[in-house]
Length: 404
Image (cartoon, rainbow, N blue to C red; front, side, top):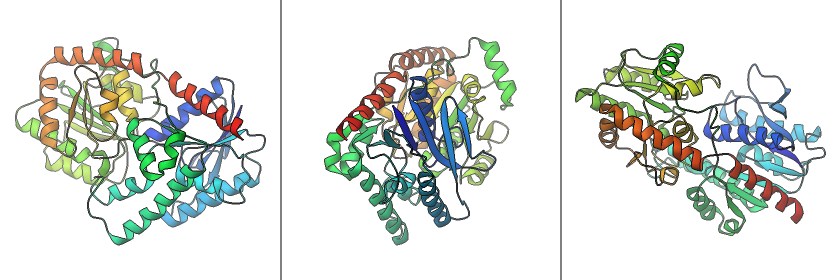
């Protein structure tokens, strides 16, 4: 089967959980013998076209000067690529993100008719959360509400026109039903996986120490708390920094590393300084594909402090596969991912004191960390392979093509 995959961004060009799923799915479909063309945005320094992991990657130019300019350039870039026969011979269109998806579906686009839509999150709610200090509800300005209404229309437009909709969690399935009730019957649960060979526990203390040295992590030998997140309010990283401040104030030794980039970088750096964590905390920025597994192996505990709208939590899955105990909030689908896992702790969103209380026993007891880490790896091996997701993609693709 020939897939035309349309996304606004994809891994490894762009950092993010959804983008990582897109990168994994396209390469693994190619490994299964499918012909895959990925149409995505061209970022600085990247070629307009290349073959990567068996996938034909075609990139359209975008203008990142302002949000309106970016939106217009995505729309025109997708349409231009389709006019230049990017979809030639494709059996179906697989859309992953609303902005580029609407461009591919708008009247007049030269595209295959069967449509498969991977839904990761309601675009409008994520947008509003940025204006609500990361939370899924609360007051927002009139302009923000107006923009979110347009985004909600885009999600609904795609959901109504999709032959099948793939979601990563039951939480996201409920979001689809809330947007377009009739789409519920066409929605398929397809939890993603994690590369269990790349993301694995450190073999011994020496390998963990080598990873720490390679990544230039904070020195001191105290347990290392890790979070891998985009730096924006919804991710709850300010709550994690405050939790670490509380722990240090109570005499708990720890180090903190936050990997990722985003608009809150300067604000989080200032918070680290105010909290007195300079020297034991590091904002690592975007971590390369090659270094990411070592970063997990160097850590002692993983924290997912999300405030709202966690559609799955791929970083959490990677941490589990790496044998890390997990402390997380109950936002979104995280309780589904951690269900039945011994040693995992789930806290209320937006509560630094609760995060601190959950972290304290793990940081104080190496044996407890090791036991929880073994359980985490076993959980990943049992539930987080990629095969289920790829099977769902293939079955859904066959169904929408047959229905044509």
